[in-house]
Image 1: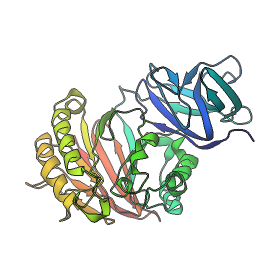
Image 2: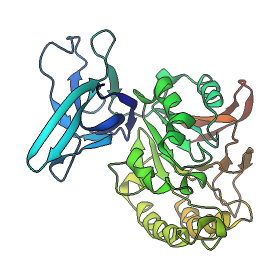
Image 3: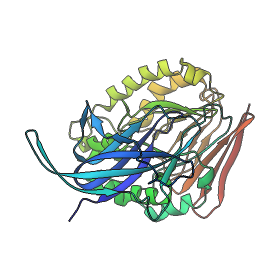
Amino acid sequence: QGVKLTHGPYLQKVGSAEVTIVWLSDKPSIGWVEVAPDDGSHFYAVERPRYFDTKNGVKTTSTIHSVKLKELSPNTKYRYRVYSQEIVSHEGHKVRYGDFAATNVYSKKPLVFTTANPRSDQISFLMVNDIHGRNDLLERLISQCNMSATDFVLFNGDMVSVFNEENHIFDGFMDKATELFASETPMYYIRGNHETRGAFATEFQRYFSPREENLYYVFRQGPVCVVVLDTGEDKPDSDIEYAGITDYDGYRSEQARWLEEVVKSPIYKEAPYKVIIAHIPPIGGWHGNIEVQRKFMPVLRDAKPDMMLCGHLHRLMHEKVSSANPFPIIVNPNNAVLKVAADKSKMSVSIVDENGKMLDQFEIKK
């Protein structure tokens, strides 16, 4: 029995000149991505360049593969396929290779991705959170969206209830997300408190943002700068549930220092719109809420983003501008999709439930 592709591929961090592609195989293997321009030629017309999954100059032998393509052209559509080749044995300098597995470019159209346009003054994205492994709910929420006009998707935490094994990720939501859009529309997975617990929690970054330094980061697409915060757990580190192995208080302090520098940077200051993404909101009396309020909000009050998008509470909340919060804070419920469309004059936000009912709608004008 040959090697098989089991999950993916799915896109991570599509920029104007880069993209990361992730996929899994059922046996240890090396992996690579082949890329072709979207020029009408058959994928088999010429030998396509290969970009290998490597680390420190060595091809990675694993069941999890990620390749970060760089030096791409902005605002350009590319076709791609992923390959895995089984490593049957590796003893000293002798490697015995097995069979190949690849995505299909023979009897169906190759998968595609499009790099971001840094000059675009329009952007459209959506956010889903707290579905806790309900594939049917995810499918109903995505059905409320025009994915052909969506630039990226945010999964803002608690997409699963427990993180004890790989199948919890893929059975829980990621296979469904790949089927619906994630092979061709990039997604960003922001950790919630449920992704930080369980025996598999430390494996998170092998699957999501695997080529990035941290799970908190900043990116810009079109007129919007997105700042992603990793808010950690919702209870004190001393809680019996964490068995004494967490230091999320220190982790959030580390992020607060990073955030102070990010809001001074050109990527943030020069963007027409600034959006903060955090699973745990600065609302409520639990330890995680208080930490977000105490460590992140002083920086954000001075930085004045256009809005903050959160989850965690499983209900809709819309904290409007006040002296305490000089920007709106939106908590998306666990059964709705939040949609954002921005252009040079306004940013429109709508929240729609699984049946298409409009729960909230507003605009931020420039």
